[in-house]
Image (tube, rainbow, N blue to C red; front, side, top):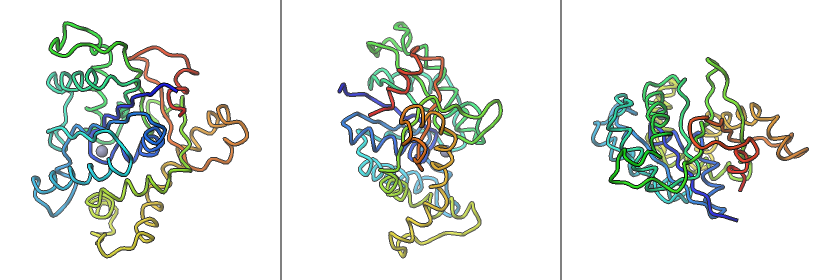
Length: 272
Ligand SMILES: [Zn+2]
């Protein structure tokens, strides 16, 4: 089986983990290469830390998640949280990253999203989708042999349309490892996102793994259950009867702006 390369470009250090962590774990375990990029450094995702200390802490958390998932790299760019914009500078930076890594698939947010950083990173990624193959643009970094396929990972937004499950990745077999990956981001899942949900700051150091696991599954496990249900038709199409009983899955929508592939080829990219 040919080795595939997956590049997940997200706004924040933990977005790729939530949306595509299971896919990353499965692909890496199957011998494929998976790289995460976070455009922002995470320096606003808390309530009682300095920006600098938080960015440093979140970089460390991303590196721990990289180890759990078996990523080749978890790169964090320099942009401040809540300030990401689809600038020419970011477009060039992403194009150089894509050209150097030579992914088969680039995965990012959709343009419809609650967070300005997610929307702007989605725009910057789409802005690179064609230009990555224009050799005279960013001509210090050669074009890859082929244009990657571009895909969007799961979100819950319905306008302009709910995300299509053009490809599905069942993750029941790696859901525990995905929770371990999420648990690396202590500042987020046990502090900021707990605070944001009105629970207050949890002390992860005093929690057992069972307690952490229960909290993560209760609050983020549902996400991959919902995405499995959103992708049920495709799960059954690909896996037959077994597709009916898959509980957790990550789903992907095909973007028309990169390489053109058939629906079967798109699903095949996500089948390890
Ligand atoms: Zn985010």
